[in-house]
Image (cartoon, rainbow, N blue to C red; front, side, top):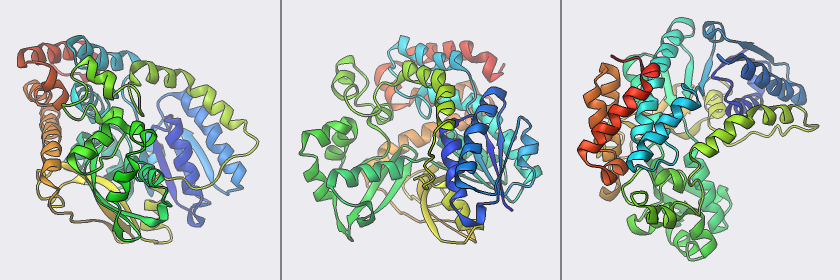
Amino acid sequence: MKKFAFIGAGSYVFTRELARDILTYDQFRDCELALMDTDKERLSTIKKAVDRIVSAGGYPATVTATSDRAEALKGADGVLCTIKVGNEKVVRVDFEIPKKYGVDINVGDTIGPAGIFRAMRTAPVMVDICRDIEKYCPDAIFLNYTNPMSMLTKIMQSTSKVNVIGLCHSVQDCAAQMARWMGAPIEEISYLCAGINHQAWYIQWKRNGKDAYPELMEALKKPEVYNEELVRNNMLQKLGYMVTESSGHNSEYNAWYRKRPDLIEKYCTHSTGNNPGLYGMGMKERNWKDEIEAFSRQEEVDLKRGHEYAAKIFNAVFGDGELFEFNGNLMNHGYITNLPEDSCVEVPILASPYGFKPIHVGKLPPQLAILNNINAQCHDLAVEGILNKDRQKIYHAVCFDPLTSAVLTLDEIESMVNEMFEASKGWIGWD
């Protein structure tokens, strides 16, 4: 019987979907799903939802719930992490102080001043989780969904021996969207996608083995297609390659679309993923319990396997051994040769009973590598600052963030960072 530990199980969408996917494999039907969260209300509520899935599928699985991380991890074969460190009050700091200075943040969970301060709050907890995995389940596969992905992955891989890979769903989501625009079944599509998390590039995009970029560019001539992703489609037209993640999130990874109110209105207001901000996150936070309760009361539960990678990875490594290729995040050991060594990159990885084999990609097209390099080196500098509790390195990492540097002077950035430190000191714990 296999055991899967969910750390941060109160993340109701991820926990529900990942538990469902794991149970679709015959080798895991009788597994233990160990749910762990520090919020006991969320924990008890999500347990109802997972129990509902087990009951609907008639699975001989066991669902346990605990606030004790060690208990959840003991003997686990697979660990999934979806934690969030910080309440709505501190997240407001991430958004509102930069906005006061003119830095209009969209999502703020992986990049820029908000992403860096989120990393400072989250990194110590992630390191503690790795220490517990080393102690209670050292051979486990640790799949992390917690953002900021690049910074946290590098911190964990550089400070622990845990077999950890960072996962995101932007690659497969974007590929499905592009195929839909072309009217192509996803089974006809193949691609090579690489870069950094939330800014990876489809450097190959094929349909039935042939270059499909011309077909995709033809599809963009339809206004309903082009307008669905204004930022990403504009980047495709100008840079020659499609980038992952939604337009709203992409707009804060570069200097082009969010530095003036008129540009935000033109590019960042009327297509997907735009301006969720505090309102969207606040609504999600307030409605979580109602959504889980409604799910638990459904007469029928969809038990079909979803599009997340995690269960397929577990199955490849210690299930039935079916090989599985996915895009994952790990430190760059020559996989992308024109991005910094030891930066966190997102590349194809082959999962098998032998473990993980990252695919050597080589060079990205230079116009793409420039943009990835800026963000990757900001992440690297922020990681150094976090590990050494060095405020100056945090400041410098924010200085070169593409959106921040497009809006503010060095003096303004210093004032903003100092104000964010002061407002966040109860969460960061630095001197």
